Image (cartoon, rainbow, N blue to C red; front, side, top):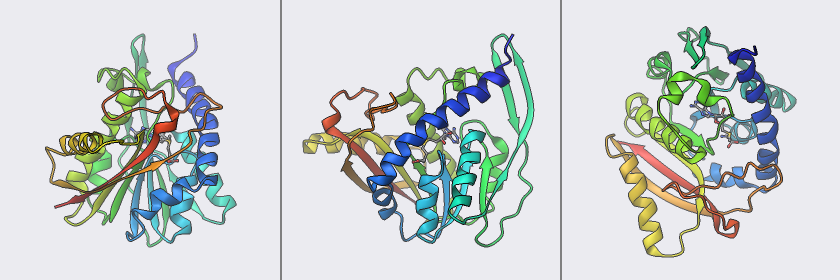
Length: 273
Ligand SMILES: C[S@@+](CC[C@H](N)C(=O)[O-])C[C@H]1O[C@@H](n2cnc3c(N)ncnc32)[C@H](O)[C@@H]1O
C-alpha cells in the first residue's frame, strides 16, 4: 500500500510544477510588481506561501528583508533554487517532526525553531499557519513590518492531514478564506502596533458601489475579532492563466466566478492598532 507520506510528496511536487507556470505568467505580466506597489515602504517582510519564489524574488529585488513560511517543502526547495539562480543565498529550515498515519489520514508536528535571524538573512521556513503552535511563539520575537499572504492555494493531499480535514473545507475558495482568516488572527498576536498585513486574492471586479461595499463588509468581518484595521482596498483586472486548469478564480463570498473578463486581484492592507 502507498503511504500517505509518499502521496503527500507526490502531490506537493505536482502542485508546484503546475503553479510555476501560473506564477511565471503573472511575473511576466507585471502582476507581482502591482502587488508589491502596495507594500513597498516596509523593510522586513514575512511572506506566507512562496510558491516557486517569483513573489519572493520580486521582494528581494526591491530591497526587502524576507522571511518565508510555507507548508509545502517542494515550494521551499524551488524557491531556494530560483533565488540561487538570481544570486540570492537562502537557507531552508526543515522542521519535520513525527509523522503518524492510519486509515483516516496523517498527523504531523512541526519542531521548534531554534534559529535566530541575522541581518538580511533570507530564511525559508517549513511551517503551516493553520496548524503550527511553535511558529507563532518564534515569530512573536521578531520585528516584522508587514506580513504578506498573496494568492493562497494548496496541493491535492492537504485533506489527508487530519487536523486540516476536521475543519471541513469543501472548496479551494474555502481553503483560501480559512488561511487568510488565520493569517489575520496570527498577525493580531505577533505584530507590533503600526505593523501591517497584506492580503491579495483572486476575485471579481466590483461594478457598482454595492459590490465594493460587499468586499469591505467581508474584510471587516474577517478582522472583527482582532485589533487590525482595514486601511486600503484596491483592485486590478487580470487575465487568468487558463492552460493548466489552475485558474481558481473565486469570490470572497465563495461563489466561483465563471466570467474571466471580470477577474480581478483584490489587495487588502490592514494595520495593527
Ligand atoms: C498559489 S501559491 C502562491 C505563492 C506566492 N505567494 C505567489 O504569489 O506566487 C500558494 C502558496 O501558499 C502555500 N500555502 C498554502 N497553505 C499554507 C499554509 N497553511 N501555511 C503556509 N503556506 C501555505 C502553498 O504551499 C504555496 O506555496
